[in-house]
Length: 210
Image 1 (cartoon, rainbow, N blue to C red):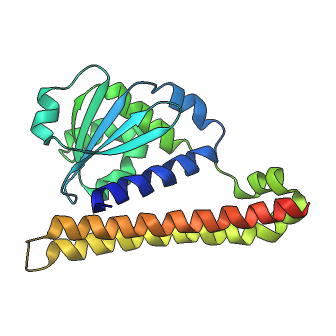
Image 2 (cartoon, rainbow, N blue to C red):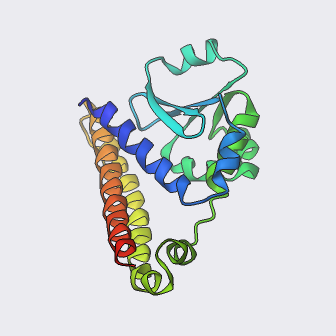
């Protein structure tokens, strides 16, 4: 499987599994039905297109930023930014400020960007409450530490990804940087996917015991 296809597949799985942990995310996702966000990150060799329905589908964007902007429609928002700015996009109040600071190029419907920011920025996941509803209070108590480890794993992976991309971009040889960055990013997402699958397997085993 090509690196780009592996990356988008694992990222798509991880995003939808995380959204599924917050029951209110379905309503925010419904507000984006039929719309799309095209994201260009300076550190990646190609753009990513997020298509919204009852789930989020992620594809590699074959067109350049200029081509997307030239053909943009009312159901599309196109964003060009850098990886360090990406976490700030979950805060709707930050969007216009980032545009003024020239840290973010935005074309198309601003409302789509605002709804996407709300989709991820308003995630409300309480591991203990969720585990309790899924497996019962006793099992939740037994596995809550695993949820904490998973959260720590997510934070560590994000930090490693930022550091790895930064190191790649500052190496003396620029040739192949895009491929290396995509490989590193894909590896991190794959590791997160495996962590989530192991966590779900443990929950299923506990559920079967009760």
